[in-house]
Length: 58
Image (cartoon, rainbow, N blue to C red):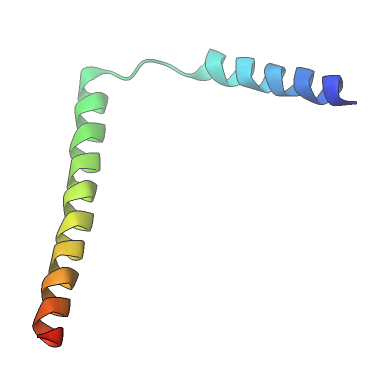
């Protein structure tokens, strides 16, 4: 039973690897920009919350 599940998992992994492709430069830079903006947004929200907490507590 376990080996059957493992073989099925391996088949699924191979199927996914077959349909994936290397991103073009444009796709890659778009992903980098969007990820960077997301990281900056989360950092800015955390910074604002920290400043607000310090101002409220004193």
